[in-house]
Image (cartoon, helix red, strand yellow):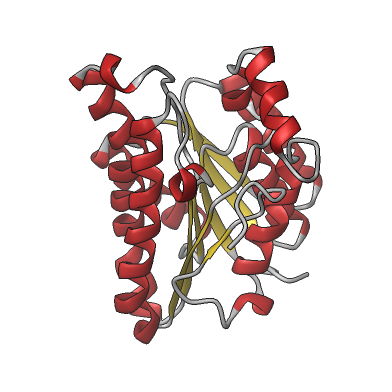
Length: 248
């Protein structure tokens, strides 16, 4: 039980990578609090699976771009479960269109969900981690932050910024006992990739050395490595399970 007795907060935890990671953490002994956006039925199912692992679960619908809502949720988790040991900063969305077609509102929304929401959720849990001298923050970026993508200029920019944020925070947090790292997944079977056209999806698969999209559980395995005792020497790193889409 690599996470026995730990408290984990997962953003975007009702589906996809967030859900898989919440369940992986629960299977290794962590109690799980997660947020979602108006996904109550799926959230209840995820919570039930966490409880089936013998762990506590709680969830709340909120917009991670709402700083107060994020802070209030983190405070509620600490009151209900105890100090938060692990933050898995995962919530995301995308709007796919050509660069010249993005509006200011669309730009602001994508940046707010990914970068602003992630930044301030980390800030919400950080003081208590500093006070205890321990904690783990994992930020979910994307391989698109490493290589870019057609019709995803804003998303790619946000994900690249997340990796920069992760490295900068690691410099400040590591001496205080807090490990900060990122994961940059390649194409994974989630609701986000489900919006791709069949032609785009097949072209993507054809270009991947492994010849398939990843599974959320494969990304969760990387999160478990970073969150658990085996990840203690990772500092400001971005691990990229991507099926060979990016090799570096």
